[in-house]
Length: 168
Image (cartoon, rainbow, N blue to C red; front, side, top):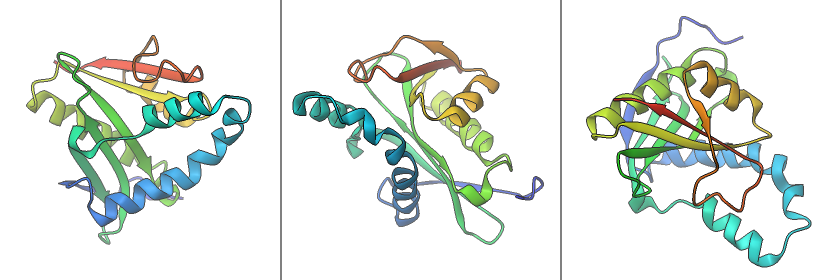
């Protein structure tokens, strides 16, 4: 069981930071199999659109953060992306290492993203997650995010759950 009193260090890093990339790879390894069957009965064109929607252009990233534990081990990742929507930034790639779950690091990551968004002049944060990520959905709802309709570029992903939160 994670230590709920553990102190986290959260730092802003480049998108291509090795620790950040390793955490994103771990996220992909965990989450991608949950949705693999969703691509079984769709056209190659739709699969390509979904892949493009889920891809991230590093040039659109406003901030990438990594949380480390008391031993300087990277245990959490999150990022903010500019989709070009006036006054809004998008939360991307929130992931906590399984060994650190339940310790509060996800809330700390989200709080830091909100702080950064305000500093960047954003009035709200938006995000997209999938229906097979109930822990993520529960977190977002607990910290004040409300559901919104699916927004571009996720319109082809019918199993998306989208949220927003005012941070102004």
